[in-house]
Structure formats: C-alpha cells, structure tokens
Image 1 (cartoon, rainbow, N blue to C red):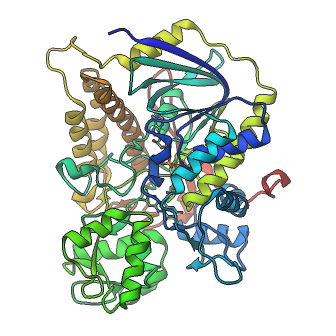
Image 2 (tube, rainbow, N blue to C red; image 1 turned 90 degrees about the horizontal axis):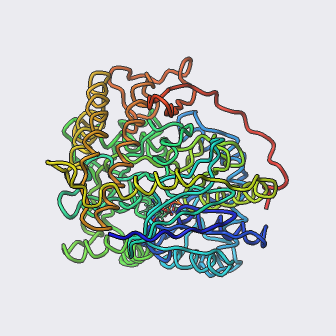
Image 3 (cartoon, rainbow, N blue to C red; image 1 turned 90 degrees about the vertical axis):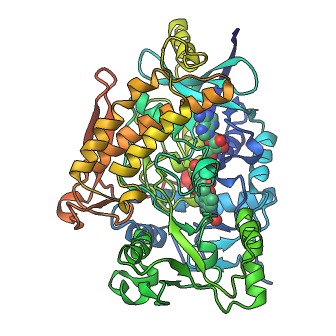
Length: 574
Ligand SMILES: Cc1cc2nc3c(=O)[nH]c(=O)nc-3n(C[C@H](O)[C@H](O)[C@H](O)COP(=O)(O)OP(=O)(O)OC[C@H]3O[C@@H](n4cnc5c(N)ncnc54)[C@H](O)[C@@H]3O)c2cc1C
C-alpha cells in the first residue's frame, strides 16, 4: 500500500483537541497571535474525549467565600494528604478566568436573579453543557488554530539533544502519514481507560465511564521518550450507576441522595462515620460501598425514593446535559427513580490525572521533564481535582509557557532517518504477515485486561492486591511487548486498535511498578495493598515517580518530595 507523507511545520503542536487542548489553542493564539498553532485530534474535535456527551456541572470552581488557598487545602485533604500544592493553587487561580471565557463563547451557566452562579455543593456550579464540546472546538478554530481531525498520534519526535520537536501519526481516513515538526508541543490526550476489564462485556465494553477512546497514548508517548511520570498508583475507581455507568454526583449532590445498603442502612453516616461519613475523602466514599458488598450487605444504592416529580424530572434533565444514555436506560427498563433507589457499582480502575493525579511530572508551568514538551489536563500529574475547569486552567498555563519558550527556542532539526523509523513503527502492524500466528488487537487487549484485573487490583479481587499478585502482574505484563510484535491490522481502524493496545501495555507496565513500589495503603479502594493496610505518613508522604531508561528499557523508580505552595506569579492571575 502506498503511504503518502504529509509534513507540517508549526510553532506549537497540541496533541489532543479535547478540554485542555482547545483551551490551550485559544490562549496561545490570543497571547501570541503570530504563532502557528496546530492540533492533532484522533477523532473529530466537535465531539471528542470526556466532553463528547456534554456536561452538567463545572466541578472545580471557587464559590462565594472560597480562595485558591481554601481549594488547595480541600484537595489535599481529599487526596489523603499528598498533592503538589503549587500546581493545585496555580490551577485554582485560573478557574474564574477560564470559566468566564467559556461563558462568553456561549456556555449557559445557571445563575440566580442577581446573576450569581448557582452552586452545587462547595466547589461546583451548574451548567447546561450539552454543547460544551462544540463550543470549545469552535473557539479553537475561530482563534486560528489549524485542526487536523482523524489523526492518531503515535509517537513524539525527539532531536539529537533529546528535545521534543513534534510528533508523528497516521490518518484514519486516508493513507497519509503525518509528520508535524514543532518548536514546542503540548500533550493533552487525557487519561487511560480500558487497562482493566470493563464492567460490561462484549460490545458493551465500550460503555465505560471514562472516555473509552482515551487509551493512555499521551502517557505512553512520554514513557517511550523517557519522561518522568508520577503517581500512577493513585488509580481512579469510580462509583457509578449500575450498567449505564453514569456519574453519581448528579444524584448525590444534585438530589441530596444518601448511599444505602440492601438493609436500607445509611452506612456511610454510621459504620464509616469515623472516616468522615458522607463527607469522607473521595476514595473512602468508594471504599465504604465496596466493604458493604464484600461483607454481604450489597447491592448498594443511592436513595432517590420520595423525590418529588419536579426533582425526578430535574434529575433526568441534568443527565440529558451530560450522559443521555442514563435517561434512556431508565426509560427502557421502566424505572421511576422516585419509587426505587438507583443501584451503584464501582468501575474498573482508570489512570487519570484529573480526578486523581497520575501523569507527567511537571513544573509550575506544566513543563515536563523533556525539553520542548508541556502537559495539560488529565494527562498531567500531581494536581488532582482538576475536572473541566482545572483542565482549562492547565491548558492556559501550558500555552503561556510554551509560547514564551518558542520565542527563544532553537530551530527544529530532525533527521530523515528518525522519521523513516517512526513511519515504519507506525505501520508495522498493517498486513503484518511476517508471523505465522499473528494476534489481533482484541485478543491482545483481552490478555492484558485479564492480567491487570486478576493480579493488579481489578474488580475481580475487590480492587485489592499484594506483593505476590503484583509480581505475577509484572512477569505477565512484561511478556506482552514481545507478543505485540505479532499484532496484525487489516485496515486503518484496526491499526488504531493495535496502537491503542501497545500504548496501554506500556502504561500498564509502569502502573504495576508504581503499585509495587508504594508499600502502604494511602487511598483505600484506589490503591489497597492488603499486605500494607495502613497509611504510613512517616515514610510515604512522598510522590512515587518513574522513568523508563531509554537504553535498557528498564523502569526506574524514585520518590520526590511534595512541594510547598509557591507564590502565584502575576502572569498566572488572569
Ligand atoms: C463521563 C464523564 C463525566 C464527567 N463529568 C464532569 C462534570 O460534570 N464536571 C466536571 O467538571 N468534570 C467532569 N468530568 C471530568 C472532565 O470531563 C475531564 O477531567 C476533562 O474533560 C479532561 O480533559 P482533557 O483535555 O484532559 O481530556 P479530553 O477532553 O478527554 O481530551 C483528550 C483528547 O485527546 C484525544 N486523543 C487521545 N488520544 C489521542 C491520540 N493518540 N492522538 C490524537 N488525539 C488523541 C481525544 O480524542 C480527546 O479529544 C467528567 C468526565 C467524564 C469522563
């Protein structure tokens, strides 16, 4: 098959046209209008990533009386004492700036008669965000960013000084190999879903809470290039509605529904009162229900019984703004939520730097440890509780810093030899007839998910793990790259699937090392070491970081001190 090569020269490359990526593009074009800004997006920018189905709340906002400092304190408590305060504070200082911008672009934010946003709990505001993604996409295009849709980015381009000078990818729509040479690059590909067996089987496996097409490509590209990563062991295990896997905050916060077990007990308020009850840190609000089920008091529900007809219909309207399939599920199954409680379940673990803090180790400017590379949104580490607005804030910070870097960056130089190697790597699985017994992407994915689910704390072991299990996971995951060489893809869609599984194997290998390294239980349910059940602040109030050695391929582990909050530079204030 003839592959056409398309070479694009740009100043700033943004990989992933999602929440953070779109905001970064606008900020870059507004601050530095002379810059050429290019976005590579795997799907179509109008409906991609976490925002594809819409959104009904902005979960990180400073409601009346709150400050970046009070937000940072809250996030630190919610994350069991360990966060990068400098990152969380600098992001919070830009919530207002980002939210106001998106409102100006057309996002309806619910307000009272006096124009004050309607709070939903301490940090949330309500929105009618069904069209949030097209609004962001339009803003990025209108600002002048050049968007390339249907391009699966497969690797970063590194020059001889180990500086990131762009990326390569392939088109899902034609036989074109894209080479984008850039003075600076922002990674904004979101987190990683489908590392573990999803809740639903077969074709329904794509009914995951986290966007199923965010498969950790951004992490994997960084790992392969030798970037330092942090906190992969803080996995996100989400409490979601049964079968539909919809977010539960809409019910818990929007309708004030408590969690109950099969005996009708409000167990968080009683059995887990010592942990904070209904207001315990987020991991404990998943741990509580998991314990109830484990000890035979499941299923677990959110008690919506007795909701007034107005409240019940308000709940459906809220889901239509974000997760319409939940409303369809209730309709199809003839469920009236004011008559019966809504069953909830834990999802398989995701790696995500927005709800948790797994991702690139960055400085305050969201610069990674690789020169020329910045990270924003769920792919970036150390700053949990980002949600939509934190991803926007990080997009703004990264764009400002990348623009500044570009003003004095050296010209880009990359050898033809390196580009050819990347082209070969990208298409290696297409009609891969070298092997007598090739494996399909679906088969390899099943192998990987089986190992992760059974040995690395998946739902099959109640999300718990010990040293022996993790050593098994390590041995088995480390066999998969060799098997991956026999992957076969018959078309571009299959080729994407092949790269998605290769990326997730690289992420899974790092994740297992992180889970092995942290010998305590800091975030029960996210990271439960049954052989080290206690939180151990004396030894483990530290970040667990990793870096793949480029020569040996070995994953090196290290710890880093949590950093104190720095003064926020004026340039970040808005
Ligand atoms: C179902 C759901 C509900 C949520 N509800 C809320 C809520 O109510 N309020 C709130 O504040 N937050 C909510 N969140 C969290 C919030 O949506 C995310 O934290 C945020 O949108 C992540 O932004 P991001 O830019 O990091 O990733 P995304 O917005 O997902 O963008 C990543 C982009 O990268 C692209 N990409 C991936 N791989 C590649 C590749 N190889 N090449 C090129 N492009 C690639 C993807 O297609 C995607 O467009 C929710 C998340 C989910 C999943």
